[in-house]
Image 1 (cartoon, rainbow, N blue to C red):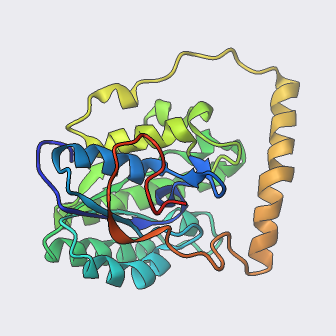
Image 2: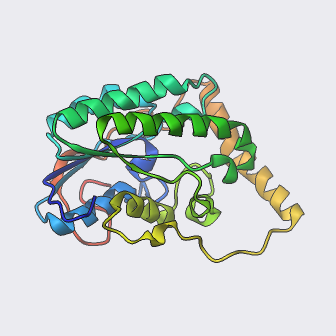
Length: 264
């Protein structure tokens, strides 16, 4: 996507990953892969306007209902659509239904004249061993994402099957959100073929943790992250309750290396 084409309006649709959770915080501001990608795209299009409509906790159906109309109003010539993970980790996951919402967004945005890109998901069971039962769901969703993208000429940033993308050093302690390095690598994946392939290279090996330490880490993760997440689900609550898009309108992109205006 950073292959010399000059874009004027970039709109990002999605959930917490696109919002930038894990790359900054609500006090200092969130950056995230979409902000980082916008900065790269702006190198060849200094007048780029960028809107980020993503809100954490949103399902694919919610992204379609809440963000697609606003995205189309922006008249983007570039758009990214990343959704489905919040569906995938829920009990009533339906890969065909989720892919249907994604495809509807692909179709609407490409029909409006936008160049659209999306992503496949890495094996989350390699990041959180307790998520191993979800691995077939990841494969099923990725297969449908590729098929829908192919039908509409949507670019796909492939992360499935890459060991580098499941390295815990790329992820936050909650194992659901990329950390700053992970967000940078996702941005680089979207930027292909303009970026080099170093984003897919593994980090230097770490020594294997002691078994007792590994068990303690799992127990701490359950208590700190999994337990509260289950509690929210039982109460019918979401991390995105009462939240709105951090950057709902097209705004200029600054090449500062810091969170962009409107991302606070």
